[in-house]
Image (cartoon, rainbow, N blue to C red; front, side, top):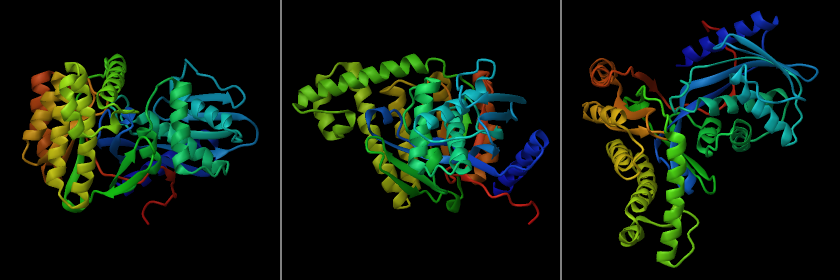
Length: 400
């Protein structure tokens, strides 16, 4: 993967020289992510456990005198020019809005920027729930941090990138995606407390055990996720209020009630509200146990917890769909898989599995073909390892 990344960096640097007539001063990388366990817990101030993956956004660039920015997209083969004094959305080139939004957020936070030239390319699949937008935003902030000596800490890069997505793009995402892109660590997943933002890197040691993170895009667009996401948030808020009344204490979120106490009170909740709360409360417990299982080297138990998470997402939180359930069932039944679950917001998107590397080739031909035959949809498989978060990359000549 290192050789492949260096090849892509070389190609991007060559493209920059062709476009602007000189070599770039900086090349930065920011990864996408997959959430291994801990779904729909983030906006309930709970715990998540994502990993940064070896799919990334790359930006090659050089600072210039003045206020004009020129940025070329390798994917869209389009050049966009704009002034840092006039940052607004460009409906003709929507791909550049994530850059414009991040730059606007940096300036509004008091950071001084100047113009620059840049070429960007990414291989994080768009619309697959692997946080291509967060990788883009974090890459822009990381480039600006290096090019203009802003001295922003990685945690604050994540917060600024999230602010850009919330306020400029208009997507009310939580902090997880930008946080793991900025602070991920190789061969590790990051336990994040979404209330305090305290975090801990936990060694997975998957690669040392012959295991890979295998993500399968179901081919189902997540068309219902916005409206259903909002309704789940309302139901969780309602559950928090009712549980606070039942327990006669103030609950700020579902984070503040443990599973034993919830089990004593759930019979007094409306059925749908009880199911939503049960998922969140039990999922927080699963995240904590998943971390303990990895710390003790018990990857079998970790896989079982992934399976349990999917059942909870399917039955209690009801954010799965027929195709995802089929994909997860087929994946879990495959002998080389330790565990599999829906990952992301739901209603389509991706499933993530922990799989023995020796079985991946057969998985592609046997399991995926079976899924495609039964659904009529085309699925994409991404074999991933956990990598470091965003940083400035060194340009190493190939062949050395």
